[in-house]
Amino acid sequence: MNADQASKVTAGNGFVAALDQSGGSTPKALKLYGIAEDQYSGDEQMFDLVHQMRTRIITSPSFDGDRIIAAILFEMTMDREIEGRPTADYLWNVKKVVPILKVDKGLAAEQDGAQVMKPIDGLDDLLARAVDKGIFGTKMRSVIKLPGGGLDAVVDQQFEIARQILAVGLVPIIEPEVDIHSPEKGEAEDQLRASILRQLGALDADQQVMLKLTLPETDNLYRDLVEHPNVMRVLALSGGYSRAEACERLARNHGVIASFSRALTEGLTAAQSDDEFDKTLDEAISEIAAASRT
Image (cartoon, rainbow, N blue to C red; front, side, top):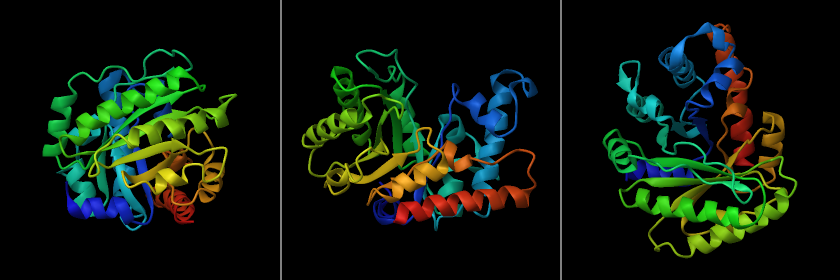
């Protein structure tokens, strides 16, 4: 583990940028960016366009290590270059932003009110490549719709795979997202908190994870997770809230910082001039960083 990166993730001011849209979510991300599906043909062209979008974000003067602690990357982004340098190398050595890799392969079908992750084939090889490329940690996402047995299955699977990631020296971000439209969102969050605490209690004293959680209905519900010795950082996902609402909710949850995706890129379009693009991105970064420091 890189000690400077660990120090920044543990104590740095700012937030974590989520730039990890993968195959299923890429068309939507491009559409929001102003590139419709009839403007490209096939996956190769689609991924070229989304890499151009991510490169424009990362190379923007506003995307800086003073306000952005880390960035979560899609595997294909890790394997590509920015300005002639591997993406992880560019992020850390040019921008002082810690590189993190999304490792899950999407969601299984809903069962018992939740969606566990699909099997992550080739995870050992992916983790070895990540270590070689200078990646600090990983991220993996599940979804919870309702309280119940499915919720516990999500948390159990997340921590099982987290141990595999910890074993190679990477820090896992555990993301059991509670759907913001759940009719029992508050109850699910109460159960999630208890389930995570149970799993944290089974970790070794020197094992640390990060948590990425939906902004809760009860302010500061996750305060004991923020303060837990096995938790390096608690991040909040925007989950479909507008940036304004996500930042308002975030500011009420002390010690939690943002890890926003759509809310970060809200308002950015391919047609903007570089100055317009940078101004829009700067406003988003300023708003999210301020809410993360409250």
